[in-house]
Image (cartoon, rainbow, N blue to C red):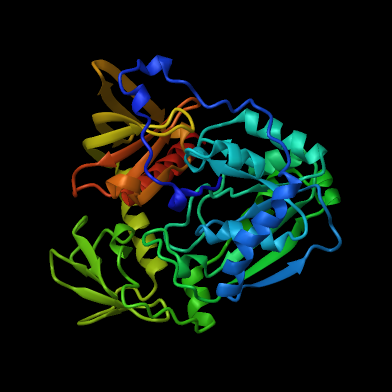
Length: 430
């Protein structure tokens, strides 16, 4: 539910290289999380406001008089999200959920500024306990419920348990929905372009709403508030993003050619995305629209292309033919001290779920995630030292960063397939 992923430097815990997996020291999620240290509040403002000024960010507030404690739900597109959040709630402080890899080599300062560590896409009752405790101390607790940067500037799936959790917490719910963060710093090319952005801080659910509405109605309101499209916003507001390399990396998300249907042979350079199989090219315009350099423009909107890929994966799932299998490199993140290199492994993702196998100094390990246990999954593009795309597979006591070694696998497709398999299995169960 939030990650300082683009600021994490590669850090390997060499001390654990020959240690048995069962003996890896694990992160202590039970250690009490305290409110952000007051003396650090000016520092958080100092680190945040220059970015606000750079992006000429306009923050529209409509809190109807509500003050802490409350639950703050934010959409998630880039590292800029955290800085805008800090400015939006000024002069108050917050505790906020951050993925464990954001704590690498800096747990002490992350705790001081109020961060709550979390492994992604695992059920974590301890997070709820920490949240309740902080709310009782009249804090703002910030969640990024999409739990990863948006892949294509549109809203991601939210956990189905969100409404029940809000009903249990019994505090007002405020949303912060930012626009333009994906355009200025997309997950597939984390180079900040400095374009203007906007954000809306508003009361979504009052204390009375939370106390009287059922969990399903609460869930519906949250999901409706999290509908956004940065590319549509860019076009509507005529926001120019004309960096010469503005399309570089886009092929990591748009992995299938709509012209010849070939998967995994898309590439990008400068302002173009192109298919190496058939040669067709599209320009990403300064207004974030796609235009074929020759022939038909199948999709002018990058999100529309992405949803076409999703529909294709859905058909594979419904036909029972979805299957991804490949060799991978595996890193383990048992705690905040750094990654443990586990060497080569084997990843299988099919209609039954995910199975990861590997070996660490002669000791075999296996991680199995059934389809019903994963409604979504976290992926990274061009991650850290390896500069490779990866899939994060978490258990309660470890997170495995899994890097496919073949070009014939897309982490984006795996991500889509996890979501489509979950929806298919849930629908089938009903």
